[in-house]
Image (cartoon, rainbow, N blue to C red):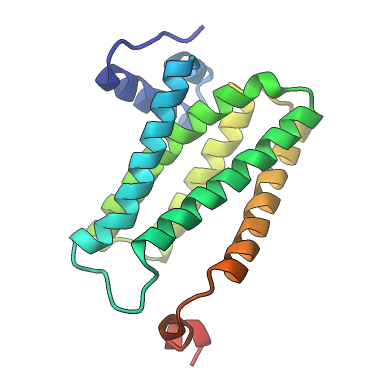
Length: 197
């Protein structure tokens, strides 16, 4: 049973150790997360803070430009994609008769999102968000997701594959829906980077 931190700072520090353990595949990762209702609420707060922070940092840093997608729209899109990912995750866990792993998955995934978003935001702020950094973050996310499935939810290898594929399908469907409901602004569509000109 995971220890229950008494303050938000303790919860943050414990979750940081848990995410670090997930990155290296340490089986003790489960002991660092709080899977109680309080822990679940804390992880959702961390997720929301990370999402809002990553949306507003470009504006604070002065890198927001005319023609970009508005911050409000970015936040709506992020919350929608998160909801779709969570929905597909719950469906697969239900099919596998492993809904007992849903809350632990949410807690660990929310905290992982918090710390990985913080890392990528810092890289962006220092102008280090090139292709190499993008690939490195992508690999990090994949490793963490596999280890959450393996160490936190305790799925078997084929169940992990089903779980990850379902999430990818859910996010892909979500992106299609976003493309239909929230089309890119005309300025972005006509930009050379988008049109390939």
